[in-house]
Image (cartoon, rainbow, N blue to C red; front, top):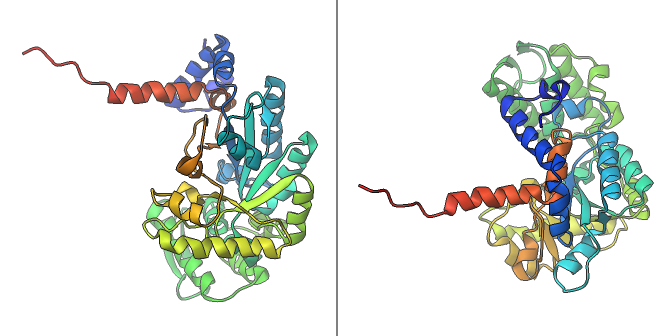
Length: 370
């Protein structure tokens, strides 16, 4: 079996090979078979922001349309998945309680305004629970995320090279936007400049629009007024809570202190306090920022009273108690993930393929005859 030509032309050769294999496996009934074999295992799915413009083209794993989430939830419902809360899933993973068929958990990272604006209504329409892992420094700043907004501005610019003049002495200069180094240099210079002062949202947006003008972009092109790169406000968090969401820990600084876990308690405490100050229930589940973690994480999180932590490593979860509950697998979904890839992951077929690949890597070599 092969993918239709209309779809094949959208992907590079290696992606076409992968999708063709998955297409054949699904057609042969293997997805359904593996859903049967793994019907008691927990699946945790990860999304980030929604989409208010063309953000999905800029970063298709960070931003997705509400239509994509609706398609995923519709398929899950028709296929027999049971969407449960994160707290219920963690409780099930640590006990011998009978589980619902094909249990799945929805999680959303960071706390983007677009999650509230375009994805929350989809969750509400399907009447399923969801978890928002909130990065509280982003939430408290009440302005666009500088790194993402600047990266978008550079991506959106059609200029191959640019001379920035009269903006700021740290930023002014010549940049080759066809090179990674040139784009990185402009992004870092602009970020450092805007982080020096305690600038509010209006000042940040005005400065970015001035830079955009020198890159050939208008304020309408950037559309910062839509809050496309902003985060939720307190009243929006409370509305989500009332709609069946839980708000949990994503750290205060969106940075896991690798090799410095002793600084983790302060970060967790600040994150918890901000969530508590918003009038929300105590947060007890953690998501590693950018998936970064180390072997010491579980011990520190347990001492802090955290009940679970999720990674960005794909896979189904059979049981998680003790330290293993601080390293839960999670499927990262988004616009870049083909429907076949999503279905293969959720059905357990991709887990089987990874097991086969790992088996091949660790299999002892047969001695050669000399």
